[in-house]
Image (cartoon, rainbow, N blue to C red; front, side, top):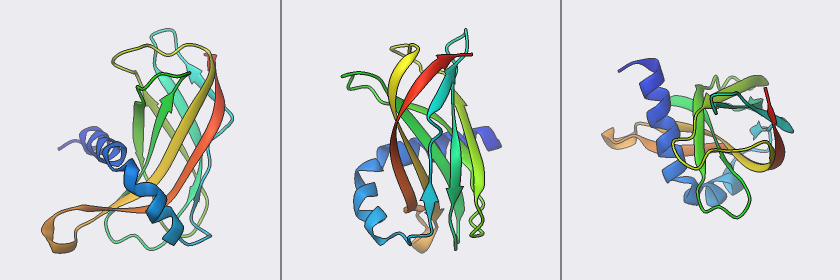
Length: 143
């Protein structure tokens, strides 16, 4: 499995499991954080790029920063890539890019959710462990 496929799979798993994130966030250590930059970009071909920083510690499995974006009252949340995370307690930058498959996004206001999650292999089945979650209002700008 290529790194891109693995990241896509992890991002998809994170999006499916976001309902569990609020409960997991309450148990996350205060030094585990994820931020979202106030501006994202949309390329002429519709590719969206989001970025920010993260800090996490103590992963035992593969860790990722996943992101999703929604505009207006749309019920559709678009997954925008996934980045491998290094959980060493230091602050790192992340950047995810992806092209929504439906309902193209437009320049303007949007809401982004970024999640630092690891896939822990307890009992053989990879289970999500959330390190940090952040929701942020941003502006999408043409690049």
